[in-house]
Image 1 (cartoon, rainbow, N blue to C red):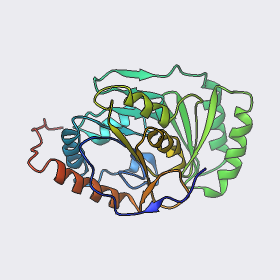
Image 2 (image 1 turned 45 degrees about the vertical axis):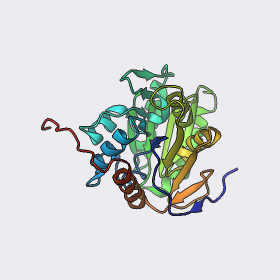
Image 3 (image 1 turned 120 degrees about the vertical axis):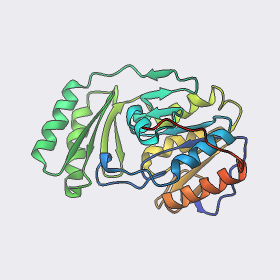
Length: 259
């Protein structure tokens, strides 16, 4: 059962960790629209240092599609899980995608719902569709009720309720499932997993790493199954930067081609 994780100053990462990180609300602050997020200064360098120090055992596990994550993290090309586990790219650059459930009628219904309720934003993803109501919070309950009714006879699909967003995805996809798949493969295999996230969509990821003897770290307020907490993305970035400086003090990032 979710509880309130302990707020604490986390010790720096150790070199035996497999590190899994959510993106929005975790590495970067949440923006009013998904396409308005900005990558904080120094984040790419910190992640590059940590990937080197952890022998590649660093992955981003997000609700965003892989293509968006690659664009945000350029020039890094990390192992990734996207769309809450619908997509996954392993450390050897192999991409796997869960078989897509039939979503055409659901996409059309979500689009029609957004047309009726001003302020809603529809985001189409590979194998999923999200309905953002950050600009119209009063429409959230009505939108959720409509989507639950829509999915009542579609057991192959599930409704995921995140921060001001409702997402329809394959029922078998989850961040926990993606993390468990990473942990069966090198360079993550045999390492102590640590997953950092900020949302209820991250709870099964926290459960997965803690069942494997690792630690979940919750960003921000709210009950959670995570064993530890940091107050905000800035605190996480500071902790990651200090860990990178400790683990890879002499690391020099390779030159990258101009984008």
